[in-house]
Image 1 (cartoon, rainbow, N blue to C red):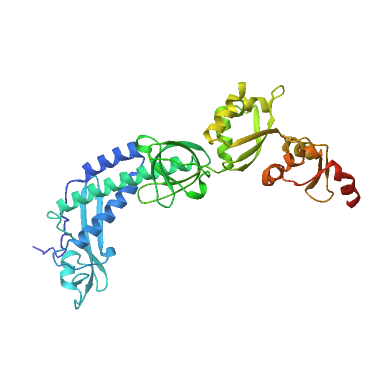
Image 2 (tube, rainbow, N blue to C red):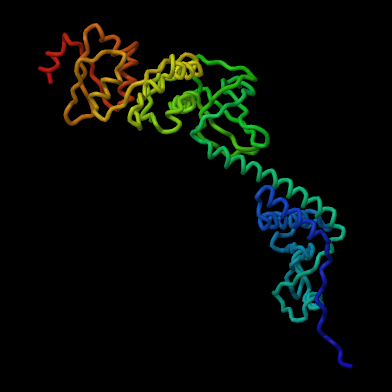
Length: 374
């Protein structure tokens, strides 16, 4: 009887946890949206590293010398060695005679797969799989929260003050339930004169969102001009539904803001809509900003009329554009000069920022001299 010289391929010992793992991964995909394929690759990598660190000979072998086959049929592991005539490294090499017991056709320099007996490794494999799944869930939740808050950039949120750093930064807890996250209100983004204590509610404007170890870190502001915009959107239904449009905002936080509005629908008084009955709407915004004064003016496509409105409450006699420049000369009654300029030049400064025009203000008594100079 002829001898069968072809050796049987070495069967790999198996840990029958494949079906259980895949059932868990499918549940994870449906609940958290983590693809099964992604988690399988994570598990393979974790199991490979666990085997490399748990070898009886305490030899650290390259990751490419370990192959993990994880499917619903089970868990298989192989150690890949190179067939050689003389073995110098037993961790990565195997004698050609021993290699041919596994694959009769192998030649020196070729690789063979040695099935790893992982019956003793089964407990470690199960623990590793559990840790990887837990870590995957945490990463997925953090990723979902990051995406959620990334979409909230440039929006206004309400949070609770957690603590005030000795340097002055305020840490705020925003969101609810599993979507809670921490936000930081830097000193430079705080309105001058405001103070908060742990437990206080605070409205903030989301500047940007960063990935962090414990979840997304949200950068927020109380000084950004768009905080005023979001507050008016909250208080004024006509702005929220598009009947009134905020065209521009100029702000010096904690002191004064000017906003330019226009009616997108005929028959709407944009200033009256923002002021509200008995001033209730604008007063709600002022209260939220702790007394910051707010001037509401009508936007106009005519630069002269726009500048005239922006300088309110001062009266304006005339506005003349400077040819070739984005600038204008404004004449006001002598009695209105200080009001037009404002305390420390604030009214003129905010009006220039609001309109985008450099404004040169002269009293009527000096207007003829100004015309001659021009």
